[in-house]
Image (tube, rainbow, N blue to C red; front, side, top):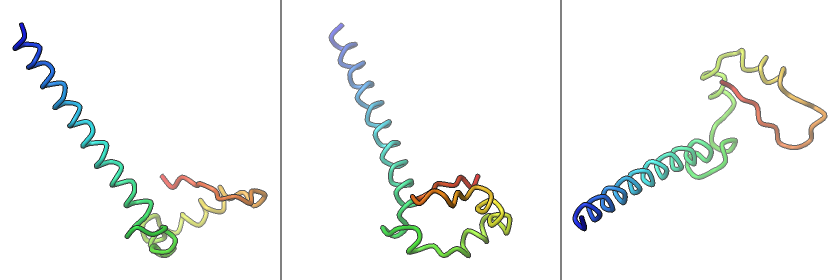
Amino acid sequence: MRHQLERLESRAARAHLRREQVLDRHASMLSSLLFPEKELQERRLAGIYFLAKYGVELIDRLLEDYRPECHDHQVIALM
């Protein structure tokens, strides 16, 4: 019985470690997307990058979703 409990505890610890590793990888990937080369996107990625990636329709999408009355930062989903 003790052996089974120890085995179960070991399996749970390994599963927890795997989940933590996956979360760490996801956090690192997200961080590198938001902060390329550890800097703000707008300091590293020029607008031409996004035009090449999303096409000229990007301009229409930005104009469509832009709210000029909002003086704060705005988030516009491109997907």
